Amino acid sequence: MKSSKKSDKTIVSAGTSRRSFMQTALAGSALASTASLSITRDLFAKESGPIVIGHHCEQTGGFSSWGYWHDKCAQAAVKLINEGGGIAGRELELATEDTESNPAIGARKLRALIQRRKASFVVGSVHSGIMLASIPVATELKTPYFSSGEATEATGSKGSRYSFRTGTDTYALAAAGAPWAVENLGKNWTMIFPDYAWGHSHHQEHRKLIEEMGGTVNDPIAVPLGTKDLVPYLAKIPEETEVLFSVFFGALSVAFYSQSKAMRLDEKMKMYSVAGTIEAIDPRAINGAAEGVYFLENFPRPLEYKNDEFHKAFIELLEVDPVHAQEAGSDRVMAKSHAWQSYENFFALKQAIEMSGWQTSKDTPGVIEALEGLEMENSHAYPQGSKLLRAEDHSGMIDCYISKVEDSKFVLQKKIGRDEMMAKLPPRYDFRKESL
Image (cartoon, rainbow, N blue to C red):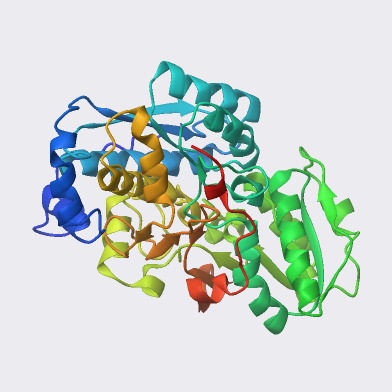
């Protein structure tokens, strides 16, 4: 595996040093008002040791192709924050534990991060099963935990005052994409997905909205984990299906697109999915199997569809090209619609820690209150774009993008602004009612 270590040469733009990059990032990210900083300056002086933030990351196992990028993003964020003066003048120490892409192991590793490695905050897993196994641990140990998986339960029925997510969940992805897809692709839907939390959550959330809009959702096709031959399951798709919504991951996703293309399903129905099914996968590498598929993205893969200085600097920092998000010097493709969270979440925590005057764990309630309703402005610190961490359910309200693969490139069909998404996304929970 190639090292993600950067050289000392400039990587942002000509004449721009890391320190000036960081100064610009801090200036653009509304970290705290001058007044609040002056009030808390003396408080910050009381503690001078490092602030430990844990990273609960899939470095090995089935999700490691994503975990590589989450790790690279986390390291980049921590390096920039420290080069810019740390958090409230204190060094930020990164403590990383490998979840091994396994929920039981992940839960144990989270406990180790908090109890043994003394992490005061945790930037967490992108694996839905792991994050759902981990939130009870974080809640028990009263440690804020930012997950980046998509199962709605993390900021819903299994969430808590300590669980946060700056990106989308399946509830938000349905709200963002389903209205456009029903109107433009068809009203008779079949969903096929792996038989675990992520897929079931997508099915439940999309079915509600599709049926509300007058659509029909056929019986779901849940594929057992470990399946390699999808043909028997693809054969179950009803002939009347107009839209086939797939939710697979990694090698199984490649198998789905390849086998469905071989069966010419794309000639009989529209193919729709979410970015998670094509994350870290280059359409050029799978022989046109993803051609014509519509994807809902959290962050457009090509620079041109969010063409601003912040996006440009971010992809240069991560050393990926502006069209296919391929890493320089390797064949890796960035898991871009998810990994940005493992960069931005460090800046969100920095913002909240400094706003609240946090010193030690006894001050953590103040950080949670600062995070609830936190506004993050499009900047070097938040290159995905401006967003809101909704106070009630700790969910990120962000812009989304519907793209279609054409000639192996993601081509924007529609940008869904966060206000449009929020119109179909009322909060179902209010974690502020829980005591701290």
